[in-house]
Structures are given as C-alpha cells and as structure tokens.
Image (cartoon, rainbow, N blue to C red):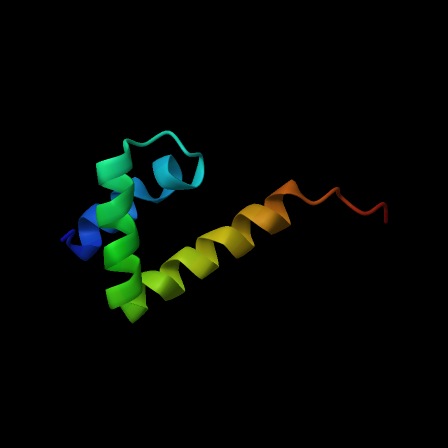
Length: 58
C-alpha cells in the first residue's frame, strides 16, 4: 500500500485520470484506509473548485 507522502505526490495525476490501473488501485486502497489522506483529497478538490469558478465582478 502507498505511504501518505506517495499518496500526496500522486493526487494530481490520479484526479486527471493519467495513471495506470494498478497505481489507481493502490491509491484508492490507501484513500479508503487513511482518514488524513481523505481529508487532504477533499481539501485539494475544494481548492480546485474555487480556482475554476468564474471570478465575480466587484
């Protein structure tokens, strides 16, 4: 299974779908087992969502 540092290094690749099936499996298994990495992934998704939102005129 992946270590947390490996999980963090692979987040972008996994989110973009640019990974091999076996690497994706190890990533998902770690995500299921590690609450800290689940939190990190939620935070990264939230940041990406905010960054992609259109800017509101002031």
